[in-house]
Image 1 (tube, rainbow, N blue to C red):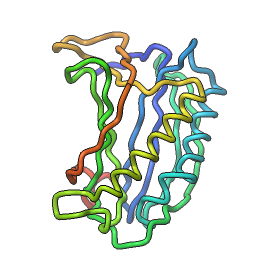
Image 2 (tube, rainbow, N blue to C red; image 1 turned 60 degrees about the horizontal axis):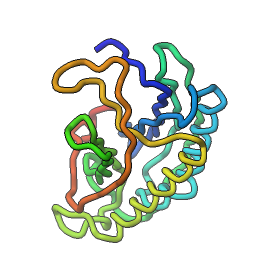
Image 3 (cartoon, helix red, strand yellow; image 1 turned 30 degrees about the horizontal axis):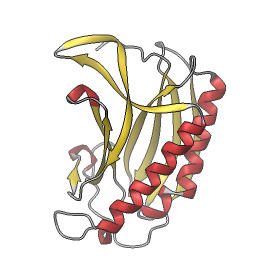
Image 4 (spheres, helix red, strand yellow; image 1 turned 90 degrees about the vertical axis):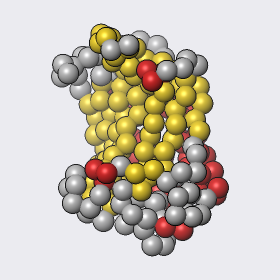
Amino acid sequence: MAFIPWPNGVQLCFHFTTAGQNWEFCLALKKDSGAPTTSDLGTLANDAKSWWTSNLKHHLQEATLLNETQATDMTSEGAPDAVVTSGEAATDVGNPAPLNAAMVLSNRTAKRGRSYRGRTYVGGLIANSMASPVDYGASAISQLLTDFAALEAQLNTDGFTWVVPSKQHDGVVTNPAHLEPVIAHTMDAHIDSQRRRLFGRGT
């Protein structure tokens, strides 16, 4: 699909390595007033790295490294981005969960339908976060929900709203993309999987 712009939009990505396997998760954001600036991008990338240091790194397995954070202006093709390198390791001690195992944050909007909901996959967990072969424990879920609440609060302070971007609706391309604000986050106990995170894929 050809590039589709996001009105006043920014993509914020976290790039990781766990035991030699590369993975990432990305958030879609919309500036609350006006178009994003180069300064905005730098602020977002730096604050994302600080959030990792203060929050998420304490709840992922110590073999996980944050390689960099990247904030990309999505208002036009070829617009600038900002990258902050890291190399900072997580600190949770324990045997790692399988590389493809992920906890999934569901991002809900005020509207229903596939165009109005999103997911954020988080890997790099420890095996002790699992309460059974199919479920994560309540403590691990609570920790990640608290972490992402802190991230969203920082994004709001920076003047951005977490959104779900939609480039298609009812099979028709939406250009520019529609950005719907996220109003709630949930996380169920099920152990989810991304096959591309299996060892040897994505390296």
